[in-house]
Amino acid sequence: MSSPSQPAGMSRIDWFSAIVVIVVWGLNFVVMKWGLDKISPLLLCALRFAAASLPLLLFVRPPKNLSWSLLAAYGLVQGVGQFGLLFTGMKLGMPAGMASVVLQTQAFITMLMAAAFLNEKPRSWQWIGLLIAISGLVLIGTAHGDGASDMTLTGFVLTVGAAFMWASSNLLTRVAAKQGSYEPVSFIVWTSVFPIIPLVLLVWWMEGGDVITAQLQSIGWKEVGVIAYLAFLSTLLGYGLWTRLLQRYAASTVAPLSLLVPVIGLLSAMLLLGESPNKLQWFGTLGVLLGMVVNQFGGRLMRR
Image 1 (cartoon, rainbow, N blue to C red):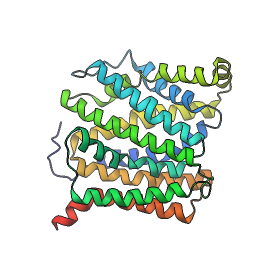
Image 2: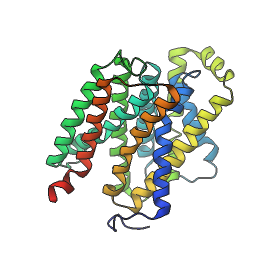
Image 3: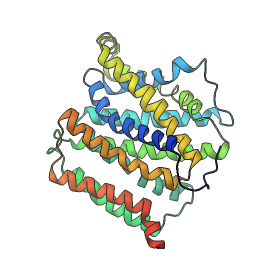
Image 4: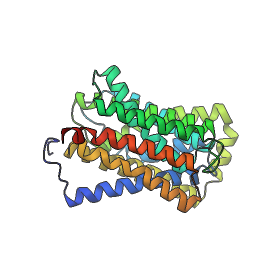
């Protein structure tokens, strides 16, 4: 495996892998909306992780060098926390396009949490990028009830919570890296086991067993396609390829590519769902994206 300190230039096959991940993750939000038409958020989330893990347990060994407590913590934070909140927020009025933008604030939340818990001090340009992104986030939040599918404040807040949980899982990933090297697919498969039962229990408690049975019986080919996309393309393929890219190249080379995910998310939501953000949401989106650009490239500009 190549060292992350190698030259930043990526091979053609790795560029292709990056483009695949960007497109898959960008379309992911539209696919979520389609699935939420018939399936409740937490049940859809449970089905996603069940499909991404249970069929593969006999063929994929648990990751070496990692403790079961770490695997469980990551699985619960990502599965119940990040995606449980995201799916619920999108069900309660968060448009797919706006969700793809707001969720990217995880980069700044990760920065703040790393400073607090890992003693990683942010640079001056990262603070500037954070302030710009927060300004954009405030604009998006104040636009609730107007614009893309009448975004609700509840949906917005839950999506911000999902970004916080994503940032928490990022910190757990760094802890995992310190315990030793691991195979990305193995890590994803085995961490995906842990959120299944808690999610099902939450659905049972909130909606009852009859609702679960009725929803499972109503699943058609469209819903099967949605679950397959979320499990195999978004989860296994997406996270697997992305982790491999991070293992092969410096984070400064790979991480900026994630800036294209909300662009694909916005365009696909406009084309496939008919969402049309208002002016305030567009300005907020530009603010979040500009803040991310400053966060990623501010150091290079200052050195020049």
